[in-house]
Amino acid sequence: MLAVGLAVLYVLHFTNNGRTFATPEQTERESGEVSVGSIVYIHIDSLLNEYDLFLDLQSDLTAKARIVEDDLNKKGRAFEKDVNNFQEKVQKGLITRSQAETQQNQLATRQQELEQYAQQKQMELAEENQVMLNRVLDAIKSYLADYRVLNNYDMILTTDNSSNTVIEAGKFLDVTKDVVDGLNREYAKSRK
Image (tube, rainbow, N blue to C red; front, side):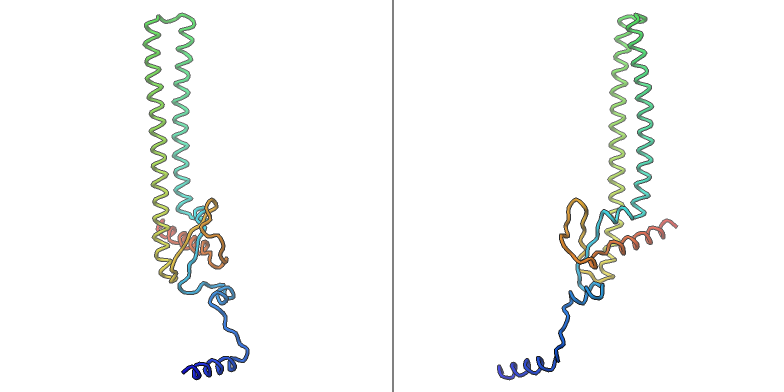
């Protein structure tokens, strides 16, 4: 049996006529295509910067934050004006001590209410930001689940500028552009 095995190897070796067989990795590199059962990756930073849903939601949230900031500034200026008026009246002796205490207590209450209002608005914006991120990540995960199956990938990794999960990989394994295009097509359909 050993002799038969050696004979087969001998025949195969010499009938190959100097041809070499490419490994799957070499074939992938040469063709620029990823083979079946591959592991690919996306740059999440690039994806988010080009994903229309994320950009639209982020723009809406920024507009809301600007409105809240303007409202807080307006309320803060009104409060500051009232404090300055109160201090001026006290310095000029235009109000009694009991009136000054009453107004001072009212101003302190208003200041607390203003601070609570600001904290409430910050919490609302933070919650809206988290909901926005959850919505975007859900859309990305849902799309990638279908994308992975459709392209027969075993795994899709992610990397970003702050933590490189993918230390070294061939450029052909980066499917970010393809994923962004697909996500934007789906989002454009849903907007209609």
